[in-house]
Length: 250
Image (cartoon, rainbow, N blue to C red; front, side, top):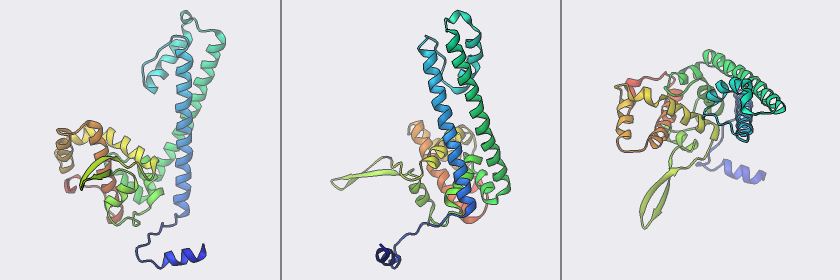
């Protein structure tokens, strides 16, 4: 093993993974803890919906809609829910609120970190990259020096299309979905939320997105925008300046 490592270190094309600093490692641990709580909350909400559905109570999709309907469900005696199940629903609701509070504490901590860290503050200036995305990206890639160009970072996130070649004809498939799943998921969510805002702006990025919407499905445009945001984030990290919509090359 030692000989193999020594041989690999002498190869000029060998790529090395930079060692994370203590701050990056701590920040990544915080994100993992928050993601675990979010997964627990999602599982609890699905459990709660299943309990209600078994008793013929259907609530519209959406976490906020269920939260709004629960007090009325617990107070309505005509629904035929037994006292023990009402107590169970109340307990699940309290656990849900507890998870909400713990997640909110993490979110507040990330906001504070994004305000004090110069790199995270620059990243947060990019549309679609809020405090969660900015701090998670700083924890994962630091200053982005491990990537030679923005496309490399997008490929590392799994946001570039896979290719299949038959008879010398390349065919583009869906994105590869390789790399950091957490960053990719949050970046796609960020792109989806900021898409209406970008399309209303007469900027190079806005015109590029509008052109895509005329010839591709909205979900495809969201992923393409996430790819573009990943490249912009790399440029912001490497060049050490904030986002400027007027200078984004489409």
